[in-house]
Image 1 (cartoon, rainbow, N blue to C red):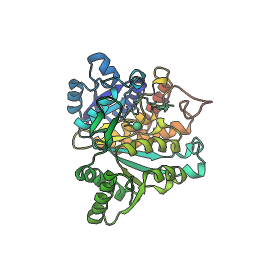
Image 2: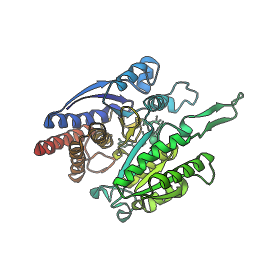
Image 3: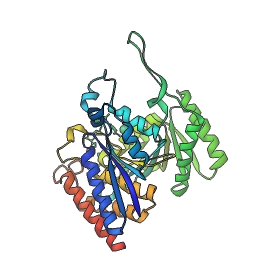
Image 4: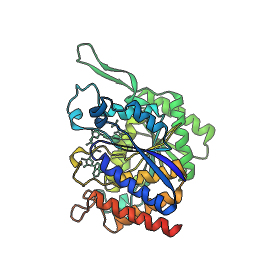
Length: 361
Ligand SMILES: NC(=O)C1=CN([C@@H]2O[C@H](COP(=O)(O)OP(=O)(O)OC[C@H]3O[C@@H](n4cnc5c(N)ncnc54)[C@H](O)[C@@H]3O)[C@@H](O)[C@H]2O)C=CC1
Ligand SMILES: CC(C)CC(=O)C(=O)O
Ligand SMILES: [Mg+2]
C-alpha cells in the first residue's frame, strides 16, 4: 500500500512525540511492505513565528492532499500568558478542525493491566476500564457566535451553539461504535441548565428511538459524569458529548490510565482523518527527552486502522506499546524511579513493531 501522511508536529513536545510515531509507522512500512510518504507542515506557535498564521494556507493544502494527518500538539507559554494576544496557536487548531470538517473526536480510554497501580486511583477501581469518548469537535462553545468583549472591555462572552444536524452526525458515529462494543451510550450534558444541552437530549433521544432501539441510552449530567468516571469508570462503554465537556472529561479520564501521555485520538469527518494525542504541547517538557510518546504512537495505530484499514498493523503497534509498558520501558510520568527517554521508548516500541509485523507476514 502507498500512502501520503501529512505530519504537523506543532509546538513544545509535539515534534519529539510525532518523531516516535513516525518510527513506529516506518517499522510497519518496512516489515509489511507498505510505502508511507511524509510531508511536514507548520501549525501553531511555530507557524505564527514563521509566517504569522497558526494554520497557513500551505498547511491546509498539505492536509487536503494527504491520505491521513498525524498531528503533535500546539501551544506556547508566550501566548498562554498574554491574554491580549490577537493571534493564538489554538486558533490554528480550531480552524484546522473546522476547515477539514473533523466533527468527531474519538478518544479511547483503556487501563492496561500492568498499569493498574500507576493510577492514583485504586487498582480495583481502574482495572478493566475500557470506554471510548465521542466528542463533538467543530461546534459548541469553542466556535459559537457571538463571542468577544463589550466596548468598555468589562464584560466578556462566549456562546454555546449547537444545531440538530451537528448533534446527529456525531451521535450516529457513537451509536454505531456502541453496536460494535458494549451496546451502551451515555450522553453527557448539562440539560438541567443549558438550552443547547436540552437540544442534545431531545435529538439524541429521538435518534436512539428511531434508528438505534437496540442500543441502551443513558443520559448523565456532566458534573455527575465527572464524579462517576472516577468512582466507577467500568460503568461506561461509549460516552457521547459536546466539544468542551469532552475536552475536559478526557483529560480527567487519563488519570485512570496512569498518564495523560497515554491517550490517543482520531478526529474524523467528511474528508481526511487526523490523529493526535489528547495532551497539549507540555512546554515544560519540551526538548528534555521526557515526554511520553505513547499517546502519539497509539494515535498512529488509530490512523492505520481508521484511514488505511490496516487493522493487523495497528494492533501490532498497540501490542508493542503494551510490551514496552510490561517490560518497564516507560517514561518518567509512568515510573519516576526507573525510566527511559522519549527517544529510547520510541526506539524500543519501533523495534517491537518490526518484530511483531515481520512475524505475522
Ligand atoms: N491538542 C493540542 O494541541 C492542545 C494544546 N494545548 C496547549 O498546550 C499548552 C500546554 O497546556 P497544558 O494545559 O499544560 O496541557 P498539556 O496537556 O500540555 O500538559 C499538562 C500536563 O500533562 C502532562 N503531560 C502532557 N503530555 C504529556 C506527555 N506526552 N508525557 C508526559 N506528561 C505529559 C504534564 O505533566 C503536563 O504538565 C497550552 O498552550 C495549551 O493551549 C492544550 C491541550 C491540547
Ligand atoms: C487547545 C484546545 C483548543 C483543544 C484541546 O484542549 C483539545 O482538543 O484537547
Ligand atoms: Mg484538551
